[in-house]
Length: 343
Image (cartoon, rainbow, N blue to C red; front, side):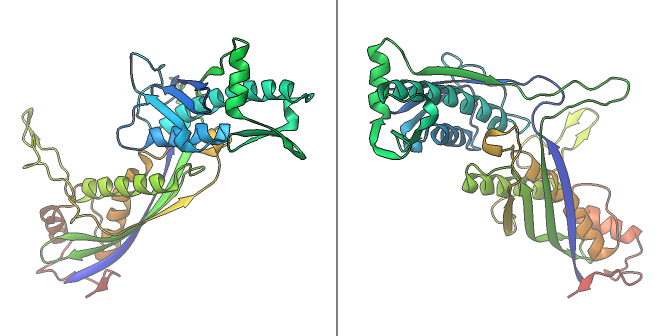
């Protein structure tokens, strides 16, 4: 008998290290040709942080992203930006890069205000590599011209900034404190199919809705969700570390199964933007949250289909078959109506 069920899993996830300092820093320099050089220690492991940080700097300085040259994760040249863990780089290093770029922007506007005989930089607008006077489009300078004017005075348009999320350590007695400066939220719905004769669980589809604060790079954010859900599907249905008498028996991918492209169901990522006041342009982190809700949603879906609450992962066919048998299933036939849909 084939039964289908739908399950929901919801999570909230603290961005950054728990109650501990986790600062990031960055250097920004606007060069004579108007391009921007950024030094930041954030390690991009494939999650796309380098592109996201470049977009943040480009937005703050109102230049195209292809004019931003990133140097990252080089212990010989880049300032410390902390580890690429805890879903923190977009939030922490993004803030460091934005603050450093904002300082460089102020330097440019101050020099342009002097050159254009403005009383304040607040009379100026910086966009598309050009600084112009509000209400007078003919009064304008290119960023390259302003940088040249600074250099003629011996001034470099170089800035640095650091950002450390405002947190407090947890009280050892009560467990209370401010462990995170911001949280990510997510809800996933999963549809599964359970073969009650074999115990095989097939994930048919996943809809993953996640609050990203602000999607700096929507395509990258969707990719993060899809990758995280794929990992969550593996955690739910096949990944298992087997240890017996201190010996690990799943030491290679021959024994330790992970999802392939053929095992990943259709995934529908949905981005919810609720800007975080402390994030760069409102952005939060999205590295780990998409993985966290999937297994719970799968377990709930199996329960909805079969009426059997699984308490052990992964949901291998053997584990599910034994659990169904213990619950009274015989030859795939449930003892009573389960409420799941049959096919």
